[in-house]
Structures are given as structure tokens and as C-alpha cells.
Image 1: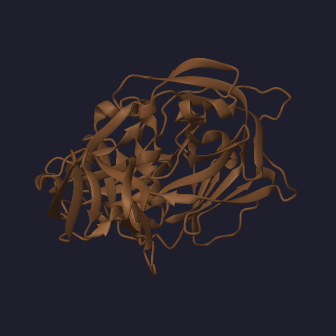
Image 2: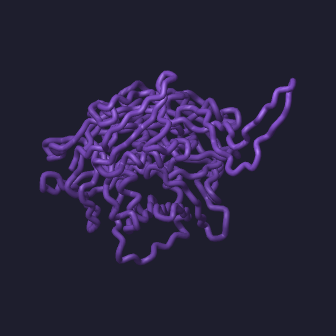
Image 3: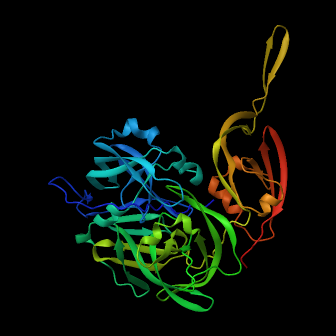
Length: 441
């Protein structure tokens, strides 16, 4: 499962603030703090305290203002106030999404705190990201944090460091590359190069840490930006306004100055899904988590600089889902589990009847994983699997023993690997098998 871009293409005005605290400040003498984060599908998930309530947010350079999802579940405890109804537009072809704008909220991230943060609470329950990522996700945060603080992301150690700009000192780094950033509507853009059909093409990309893919490119024949002959049509992800579909392929090379990435994954979203994204002058696509995670990253918005240094993930191959299956949490299942070694079963007598209770097993509630997307003509579809099937086991291993991400990673294995799935469908248990297939090499 790869959760892709949730970048919000809304246009927000950054106004003047009053005398109250109008920026994130760090409450210690070092003016810097470290935060442990979770790396899920190339996405950075950080703990954020909103009005005293501990939540989990995606750290997303592609969003202008914090957005709260699952609003109906957390509204009572967040004490949201000073609200007005607005409508947001994002990726996807659906209509605009209703949201509640709230002012003067208290945000705390590690030891960084802001006392008058605006946020946008989305009503649409279909935008719950938690089932897709396998962990609770309550919202996304971006520009306001990056604008106020220098943000260092160490993907390999899963550590985030926040520093007040006046206290930040850039270390000499001969193995680093530094880029100038351009900003449009509070979002960072970078000028880089891509090689397609042996031709190097200059491109401008949104830096989108809220997307788990490597690259998204907008097809443009005049510039030579197009998919190769080897591609397949696929579900690409969810935006605020619905599902996004398009082509999946690879580019020959992708260049970040001296850093060269070969055979990088690329997606070409349908033009109807990104019509508003294309309105940014000269934008050619997005650079996302599957590339960012290969570096130690420093975002310095105050100086409009991005600094990259290769980390242990740099040489990892660009794999992709070769099954055609997208899974998500789909409620819970009753599962019979072995307790471990039990010496004697419990015995009792009732009405002269001997009753033996076998204490070797217990019944527990475990997460259920359902098929929510199934690629047309994929190996999984061709063998008879269907959307809505609940996957019970993969290659003889019970799915409840694994996280959602661990199961999805099995579908990224080498082409030719045989997969055996047992599923529940309408009260029946069915068995299917197929081989992972590589359509791009």
C-alpha cells in the first residue's frame, strides 16, 4: 500500500498577526528540539498536540495550513472555536470539500509551541487516511511549521530536528547539495532535471513530502515529458477531492545536481485530476517521499534553501506493487490464538456432566485487511480476487500477525514470486494464487 499525495492545492493568504504569539517558538535555552517520527510508506508521521489533545499528523510540505481529518471523532475534545465554514479544493476530480476554519488553536510539536494557529477541519468521513496507512492519522501540517523553523529530517534514524532560524548554523558538508527554493502559495518548488528517451529535460517540481511516490510528472509532448512504452494504468492515490488515477512507468534518470537516481519510479496522473495543479506557472509535477527518504534533508524556508545528503537508502532499488492489490484496514475479525504451553485443561461438573475447558487458546479481536483497489488486468484480478475480499492469510501466514505495511511490502517482491492468498468473501473462505509480474522492466 502506498499512500500518495494529499497535497492541498488551496490558496491561503498569510496575513499580519497581532501582539500574541504568531509563530512557533521553542521553549528551551538551546532553541532547538528533537522529535522521533514514524516512517510509513515514505511518509513522515509526527506527534502533534492540538489544544492539549495528542494526535498524529503527516508532515507535508505540500499543504498550506493544518488540516484535521476525522473531525467528527475528535471535535468534542479539541475544543475548536471561532469557526467559519469554507470549501477546499485539492487533487482528484470531485467537487470541493466542506471544511470548518478555526482560529487561535494551540499547537505543540515537541518543545515547539504556537498559541494562535489556524486549522481547517474536514467533515468528509471518506477522507480518513488511517485505514490506508494502518495507523491513526488525524491531520496534516506543513507551511506554518516550515516557515517558522529550520526543519531537519533524518529519514534513516527517523528523527526530526526543529531549530529557530536565528540559532541554526549550517555545518560544512562537502557531500551535500544545496538548492534554491521558489515559493508559490506557501509551497516549495525546486528546479531539477529528468532524462527521458536519452534527453535531459529541465523541470520544476513541487516538493511534496506528503506523497509516498517518487515522482509525478505532467505529460507534455512539447517538452518531451511522456511515459515510456512500458507502463500500466493504476490507482495513484487520494486527494481531498477524490481518487487519482494515471500511468505508472520509470524515467531513465533523475538528477538532483550531482546526485543521480537511475530507473526512478514515475507516475503520470490523468490531466482531469491535476487541472488546478497545472495552473502554477511552469510546474511539471511533484517530487515526493520515495526520493526524499534517500537523503538527510534540511528545509530552511527563511533562506529559501534545501540541502540534501545521501543516506543509507540512496541505493535502494525503486520497487513497486506487482500484485495490483491495495489493502486497507476493514474493521476487525475474531481470531483463535494459541496462548502457549498449558499443562492441564480446566474441568468442572454440571448436572452430572463433565465439562472440559481447553485453555490453550483464546479468542481475540484482530485487524481485518480488505482489498479496496484492484488494478485491471493485474495478476490478482486475473486469478479471481475481487474488491471487498478480506485477506486472511498470505503464503500460509495469518495476516493479523503483520502490520498493513508489512503485508503490502510482500507485494513489492521480485517478479515471478508465487503468492497464495486465502480470503473471506460473503461468508465463504476461498483460496487464490498468482505470480507477481513486472510490467516495467
